[in-house]
Length: 307
Image (cartoon, rainbow, N blue to C red; front, side, top):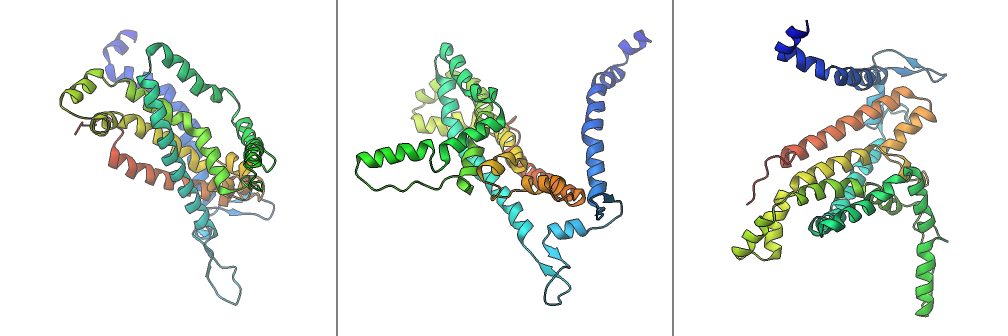
């Protein structure tokens, strides 16, 4: 049997991927199928699932309701559409800001002396050694009305003899955006650094010999060759931001509601797993659609051609 296995390449491949297939089927495919089944069910008065086939949860997510005032049979409430749009806009803004901050830093690290790169990468990774929630709570100490930022601003304004009123920064959409950018910045720096570090220095020398200045070299050589890292980092940032709820719960004070918050509250607070399952699937589909069009436009970075 072992001899037959050595000669059968197809059986060897099946044997090698079988552990991964078992894990994926048990921890991904089956839970997704169960979530899909539950999403078409109905909530019982005691919070359990009545297994049936109903589109009520998806109709409700679309904003339509039969519980209307004035005797109307159908009415439209844009609440859930606004939550979906807010999550999408926050994920987009976070990704753009993270790219803008991560690219110069990754470029600096990649072009630094080899002996210093390890130190710089170590400093980038240090925040990841701390618990995610603790890092978010640290921002509360910075952004609150009596926090570090307002204290420093008040001291500066006092030196300039300018009246100062503490800024209301905590529990705002801006605070949530800052928290998201901070939490996911390392996930953009590392893939961009990996792409930049692989660029051969002879390409920069060739560009200089051909008369290209630093800006032209950046646009025609560095940026195209580093696109694999940018694409990978975008996926690593955009998808988690779409589904996270901890940052918006803490820094938004449960006032900035995202899709992740909606799903969490449906399962834990409202005890409506059917609506929470429907919202989870809509979030997954929306994320897949955005990711599909993004990767179709830019690819996964394997075939980047220098212009």
